[in-house]
Length: 203
Image (cartoon, rainbow, N blue to C red):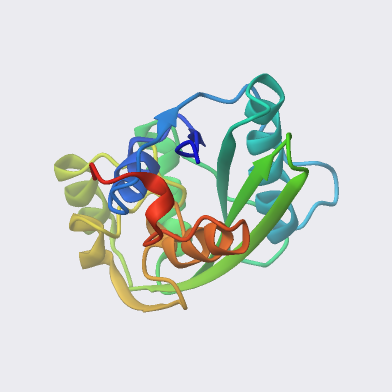
């Protein structure tokens, strides 16, 4: 049986690092997907739609491959998505808005294989309560760790944890960008268990 061709449909270094923990052979193919929020779309639905869209976009080009797509959308009110700030002013505004509040991070992951017709998706919610943050703390944090590529502007796996009061999640890796428990579950459902012998000996 040939070794599965596993592709991560992502441009995220964080997702690549997380998937590498499984010690599976995989390659990375960036997906071409419009990540805009649709009118009236809820954050959890948006994360699921985009995770599937990313996986399907790459699977269309590599129909024999098993393609993983993932997306994360943050929200403070359950309705409006909070994206990556992209710059200092937007990051300051996001952290001011998050001060003393709980944000929900919806992280979805999809697995698609065009040849077999397999399509599945799981979503994980992580609730993050931020400390009360004054402007000096926000500026100091962004000076030390400019988390402009993170939804919510805080890198929880690094110095951003100092901004957080509490984190609640069923999957500790979901907040970083790829829910690894869900990834393992999807691969199991596809008949490709992470600890199975179909991946070859050189891991």
